[in-house]
Image 1 (tube, rainbow, N blue to C red):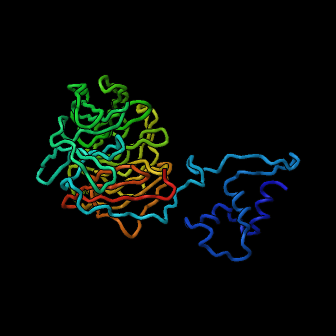
Image 2: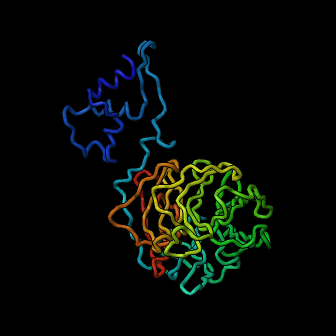
Image 3: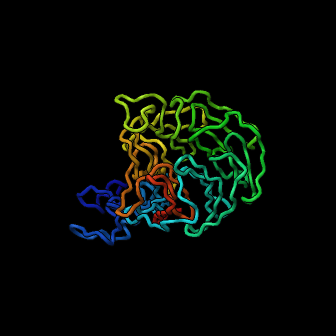
Length: 372
């Protein structure tokens, strides 16, 4: 009996794959009713994970196969999205309400740096937490540039804007570069990829460094143009840039900031120099001031600002490949907001603060079963 015949023998005439039957609608087999005979659980298990196969012409010899995977993650470790929900950790953290606070996960803690308050007030403080509920103030007045982008690289916490600073413990900071070649940028991102720190997402140029001192411009004019307020993330060995804004009036003009046009396209690059547009119009609406993180083997985007309608966004989307997107919309969730602070920490995705008009200092946590 060949492999296809064996599958049909187990399924009968339905033609539905055992993997789909076992996890239809993200529900385990124990919660579903079957029309007809119940499939033997052992047979479903064998076909689902593909561990054992008897091939014709091999004398019925059993072959050990690799576990079935989705997006490179074994099926048995895929998170079950349908059973997860946002949990409010606190409605008012110890730090003051703010947006545009920078994030880092360093030394076993979530770090929150600086922030914006109404009236263009800049908070220069630095906070850290191990649980999202209790936050400790590390510094009242950070020495680096306000709104510096944060990254963890080479065992240190880095702050990069018009200058470059680093620390090994969070309290004592050392300036390693007085002036970056790209200068002060607004609404850019600092990420770690391919053994380097990368600065992108504010302008058409892309920069990287292996030591924080010597920076190389790997791309002067990326095809997505002079973007700002985009979402940037590293996923699947590539840099990803999504949405954001270009200066220039839309047709018809947006109801929000009329000098900008926002996008919902998606670009990626393995080397920062050669970029490909993988999606021109994602299913989520054009936006700026939104954040992306890699969590549970997928790209996640959260919130943002809908410039076309002058409204905050509270939607959450995820994708394993950057092309096919699904909305994540449990009943309980946070208020619509732009410029929240996101973390991936302790097997969870965290949404902290942001601007819901007014700005917030709440903390929310999403933990997917099986997420690493």
